Image 1 (cartoon, one colour):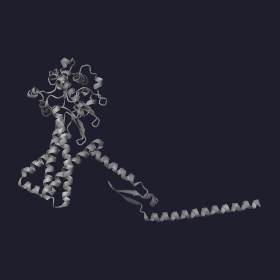
Image 2 (cartoon, one colour; image 1 turned 90 degrees about the vertical axis):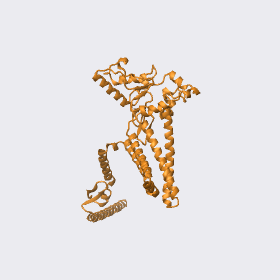
Image 3 (cartoon, helix red, strand yellow; image 1 turned 60 degrees about the vertical axis):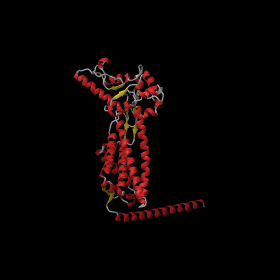
Image 4 (cartoon, one colour; image 1 turned 180 degrees about the vertical axis):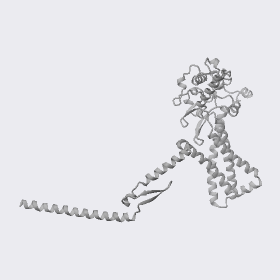
Length: 415
């Protein structure tokens, strides 16, 4: 009986396996038939559109499903990378992300100027008629527009005055003196404390053929109080000795003379070399915004009941222009105050963190020489990028901290 049961179970298992094999063979036949039908519909080659390089020819795969599952994103990505590398070879400035973003901001700023002025001339027919009657008015406006853009690019492309450039200039001067075998006779400092990067080699006890590091160190130490360590003056990033009022800019990765701030819209630092150009750019930009706002208001007064969509566009542009004008006007007044007191934005904001300004009262401006002289040196004397200033002595600080009297105003002490 037991033997009979075992035989029955074995027969059932064999029949089950045979049924499964028959089903799997039938499924395989159906898949092969479907594959042959798909292959008859697919050509031997498939032309796939490429968005950057025209068309690419891809050999077909055995099945249509596998062809559709081909990673098209990788093909598109490779073509994009190839196009980008070609652009980088033609325009090396686009390879740097920082310079690429700065270039994008410059393009955006120029487009904003063109949009605000262009819409004004497109919508305002009275302005065109006024240009025919009084052409000088529109000519002056367009000249201011062009001058503002020129001043913007001139400031953006100018050097703020890097410490490394000053050291290089000193090195070139020393090499020229060594070649001519003529010692320098120009004094190292003047009465007002300003310092040109030339040193009296006979007084310093060093020859002009010495290294620029030693000469630069001597000059920087002479601008600080006696006993100052060189280690405290050395930048940990550039490994150079910083003169007073210099600071390392992490965006430019260089030390800047009389560092004011790093302007994102210009893509460069504002320092001793381009602070005057920056002030003139702000002045021209503020004047252009105010003048454009006046023209927008005149248009709305004369055409407020005409096409409502034009009025809506002009009102939105006028609101944003008013905000920009207020910001620029405040910025112009702030930098005018800094010029008259011979300060920088960094010195005003971070006064408590700067070692040589920490113990000086807030109402005392250590580098100020009077409003008139500060203005004169800012506009006229700063033709050289390497005009350095030493720290004031305690006697000079005491004189500057003395309160003003009526006699001081009569004697023009503030000037």
